[in-house]
Image (tube, rainbow, N blue to C red; front, top):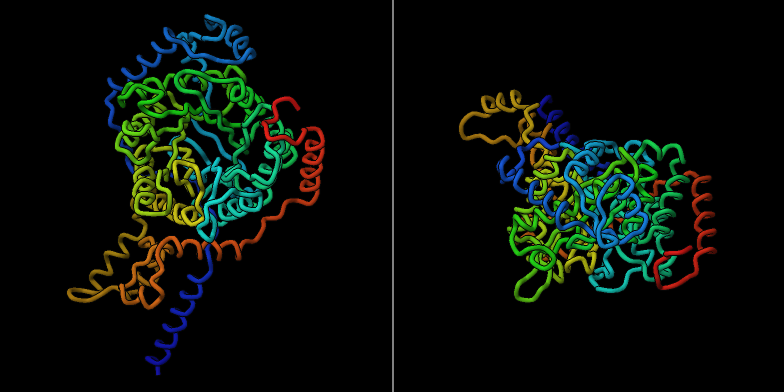
Length: 518
């Protein structure tokens, strides 16, 4: 009788575990706290050599700031300006300015459960942005719409390893460029309650984003709570333009973090050699980081870059090359040398479809960033074709890969060590552990079990339709969107956001050009 009851109980237990696995877990993973040693290829002397070369560039070559306000700001703090807009920065001034950048801070989301410690050994994954095309759920490459953008924000909300909803993951062509930033920002806020990125496509656009953040969180809240990240790209070599600098001011004045990101195509706009390319990139990043502190001392800022190398056969940007991995590891060392958090790009690829090239390139960049200790891992989901399209299938596969990388970077778990070692004595030689209580209690956390990889026998795979990864991911994304539940905005806040959008759309002429004036 006892044996029958035990069998029934075991069947009920298996049924409960099967039912539990059928319910999708969309709870966001906490900020990744790294538990693995970092890969640091440079010695202390080599770090100092890069630093010295970068400081020489800042002092002797100078950096062009194509912006009258920035030039006036630099003169005010004692920097030397030559030829109208070339700023020569004394290394002592640079070091003094960057000292006030916070090494750590906390991102605040509208759902406090999604707040994120950030910096030092804490890291986050952020989806890609800026794709002019998408590959949709039918694998058709086409122009995106606002509805497509909303779907990506929904997928980001439902992906546990993605910590942010980003902003224009894809460009919504069904709305005028001059007003597009308003609808993009609203989509970020409406469809996800995680932190997000804010548009920096013009200073006026960035100011609109900050006003919408003030509506969502409260004006006073922004003063000491980072809620949205802006990205400011440099024009390598050694140029920062008026659009990016104006957007940077909009974020820094409201005490919101910005990525100070030289746009590096190694061998095209940097020297064709790894270490000198890092020296130039480092100088460019330092000049922008220093300027954030001229704007507002203590404002959060992130050492950033977009990093690629170019094919010396075609001039096309490449991803997943060994030099990119080495440069990321070096840049991580430089950021830690200065005591500032840093950003890089992961899951990049130049493949035109979700093929083996896409997988290899993405895996290489993802692994390198874990080894390098990156804090802000951008473009973590969907990137393909050198950023020209965002693939819905790749988006969900990449998100799962981020979850796998997250688990690896957490490091070794020791909490069940004694219990599990004791199981060895229970089983003894020649047995198996599949039915042991420790296995039944820990099988879901013991080894990562991907949803989007097929590990069945070829016979079972064929019997189930021989579905390959791209089609499997498309079906998975469809299911996610069908199961999506909107994290509702407060009704009053929602009405205020829509009223602000209506007001600004009435003030900004609908045009296929950036809003620079209104």
